[in-house]
Length: 241
Image (cartoon, rainbow, N blue to C red; front, top):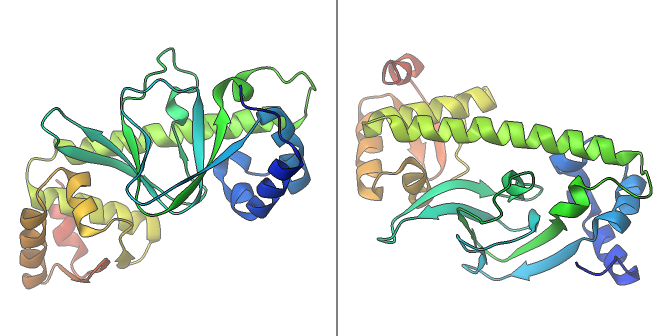
């Protein structure tokens, strides 16, 4: 068990309070309540360098993380070293939450730092155990946590949809349409770099770029770096049928 939060720990939590309170885990919970609950949740903040691994697939671990700085990639690797990106976690995002209520405590995926990264870890047992102090925020925290897990399950289901699409154009069209639904704009800044997007869609980078260029030449999309403009949304939809 990690040591209880001391004065230095509280000061560190306060330094990141603006980020912590914006995390979906602490939705509708006041700042003073967050500081109070940290006395019960035994937080631990750790720093990681670029390309460092936070958690390896196959590890047994009793905590989940909230990203405070930087970004990390949740990915699955096979025996040949090929990898599929499951998600990118950014400031305020959680990882490892799917295992909190699970009977399995072995991580099925790896979490790797994109750039320098700071992570707030909370232990599973502190979240799910009945609070000895009967803190009023505990039910709100659990409700937020269940919502996060439900939303994550829907995202993973969408990931399966991408992987089940046979052709590259269909994968690209489906992904862009989902981004369009999220932003309600024809101009989209993708959250993934081109290499990461290729791994996320489980296609090669050259094949992805080649197909995108064809779609641009056909007047369906336009793009520069990570910014895309949908020029013919009906054409995109036709590839998802």
